[in-house]
Length: 257
Image (cartoon, rainbow, N blue to C red; front, side, top):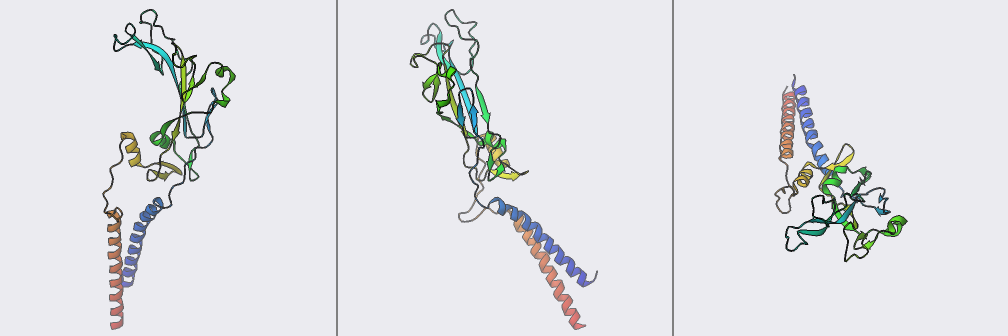
């Protein structure tokens, strides 16, 4: 290989090294570009049984029934039993006479999830909703309560109750409440992958462990440094310097000849 070819080879190597370094840097810049917009839940979620509508990312219906259970403190209870609100049937087949519960719940607990949530016009993966979403109690508008249920239920607290006297419920009475799924700020927790917003690995691990990811130590006024970029630019600089030296040597030898 003559000197001209060697110079060209070194220049090509330096250019390739700089491109390899710049590509990840460009991706990093894209990831830390404009702040994310507000996520959009899509069409409202509806509990058709009660005419309840939510425009958030999830809707949860909780049904509780007033029932007997064995008392942990027989002295405080009524003959070893007490009455509580519970979201699942309590088996009373072995209870003493006069402490009989209904065998099933007249209404079931249900949960609905948004299936068309987006962020900045791109789909928001359902894993994001399940991992980061926060359930918040809300009081629905009961103006669309069906006639058959309005004859049984009346507003009670943030939901509905079937008790004639909410202060003195009877065994078998129901109360129904709803929660909405809201999303916290998503900055730094998502990445675009396969044309959809998905959890970053560290955000997924933090959600799984119910603990925030370990922060990266930084110096005030400086950004965290990635040593991969420093080594990459060093290699590119050395290659470019070698190419320039070869070119200058070849030029001097040509003049001397």
